[in-house]
Amino acid sequence: MLLRFGQHLIKPSVVFLKTDPLFALVNRKPVVPGNILVCPMWSVECFCDLHRDEVADLFPATQRAGTVVEKYFQGASLTFSVQDGLEAGQTVKHVHVRVLPRKAGDVHRNDSIYDELQKHDKDGEASPASWRSEEAMAAEAAALQAYVQ
Amino acid sequence: MLLRFGQHLIKPSVVFLKTDPLFALVNRKPVVPGNILVCPMWSVECFCDLHRDEVADLFPATQRAGTVVEKYFQGASLTFSVQDGLEAGQTVKHVHVRVLPRKAGDVHRNDSIYDELQKHDKDGEASPASWRSEEAMAAEAAALQAYVQ
Image 1 (cartoon, rainbow over the protein chains, first blue to last red):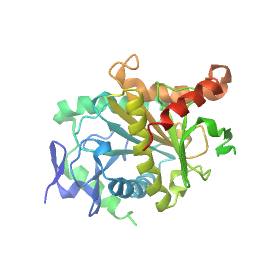
Image 2 (image 1 turned 90 degrees about the horizontal axis):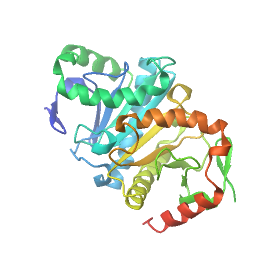
Image 3 (image 1 turned 30 degrees about the horizontal axis):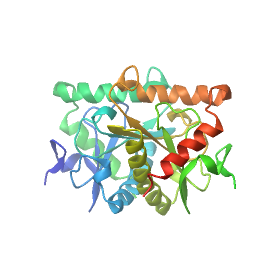
Image 4 (image 1 turned 45 degrees about the vertical axis):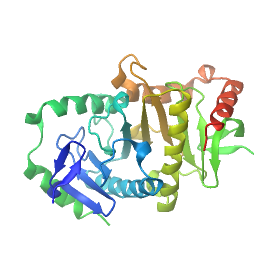
């Protein structure tokens, strides 16, 4: 069954963690290797509209997902981010937590990761040709599943 | 009673939201007006070391704190971010969620907010002369307290 992710429909093959209230998926155009997204099952646009219990479910799962990608991609640190609204750079109208395993020197200047991330979102929506193949994404999701505890 | 925030001790006057397991404080050098921090009471460095229940407490409180600063500072959006580890730009060794109310054009280029944020952290630690006065911070915290529900 396809999953709703804002204006997109997501194939289950790119999901590596799924519980009743949420799912975590690999990215079609990761900013750094292992850049994944964690989101509630319900397609709600604004973080403020999530019920307290939904928020309380979302972030422990994000913590788990972070541990998975940090191990698999051998990250030294993690960046977590929520862009809540247009002025914060949100492009997909569905609350999602971005998780990025980080390494020293992983972008041309380590500080500019978020800058990259936001430009990237806007560019990515407009250029499907730059997306990864479904096969590559499904293979990554399958590999990550093995690390989920 | 002073509160431990990593290598810092925080006066209660700069805290605008406090529950048993966490507190939210105003920033001595906000990147944008209303840039506040939410953190667990326990001074733990790594997000992965927070217990599931602590994570489940932290983010609903962050959601509340976000609503407060968005209203008070008339933000149109919110940015949430956790820098978990040195390579992600963490400077204070105590898990904290950064919350920033956002407006169109609030930084010279809206996309560069995180870039500003990380440079800012590093510069800020080294230049106490650029910090706001304790009085200004306490006044802001008192004003925000009135919006906490």
